Image 1 (cartoon, one colour):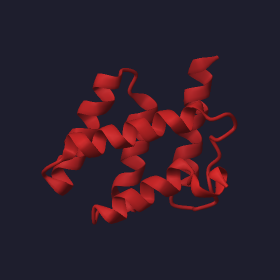
Image 2: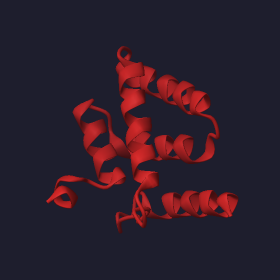
Image 3: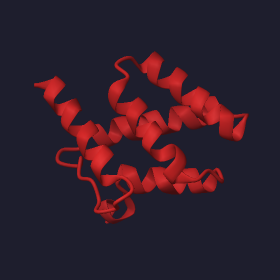
Length: 105
């Protein structure tokens, strides 16, 4: 039951951005880039806060913290780095995930 309630990160992020009235196709890929490419938590937070500020203005710290925490949960789940067949995300995200794994090994 917990697995049914738990959305994968990509779907969760799309839903989160829709709730914030942000086009997920515009910002979703950029958020993935920050999460995958930025090494330090401080860099991730700073970049995400700046990205979100241009769209929502306030409460960026709260939303940034939520996104980073959700990303960390996603990364820590075994075998959960599966990308959907959504054409708008598949190629860039697959490449970013491959880069992340190549740096980890």
